[in-house]
Image 1 (tube, rainbow, N blue to C red):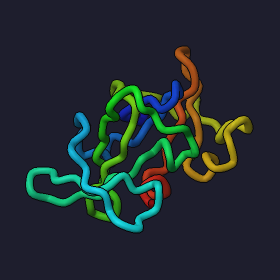
Image 2: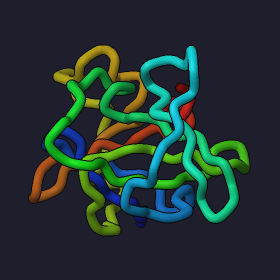
Image 3: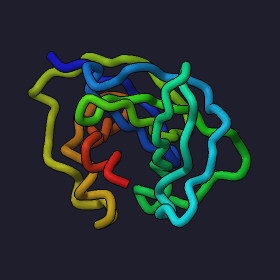
Length: 137
């Protein structure tokens, strides 16, 4: 049995291995990083620690959302925290290996390298995010 912290982006449900997630928060004030790629949303100060923030919408090739403030999922990448901007945080879900499949053929090519696979659930597909690839802004 695997546990995933879920979140939504553009109406799709994604999951990150619960062991990689440090915390989930409302968005913090970000400081822009000059000359950084579009995927870098800036730096945030989390209790005195400066943390890189990656805009997952941009990273996955989705349009930016102007209507709502994103939320942050802080994950561990190579022992360092990285903040991922998401539309909305979901629940922690348990899924078994029997529902896991390769990434759907219908995924856009830019997303395929960031999705490890998908779990088929009654509520729909749960796309499993490759945290290391997603955080490599």
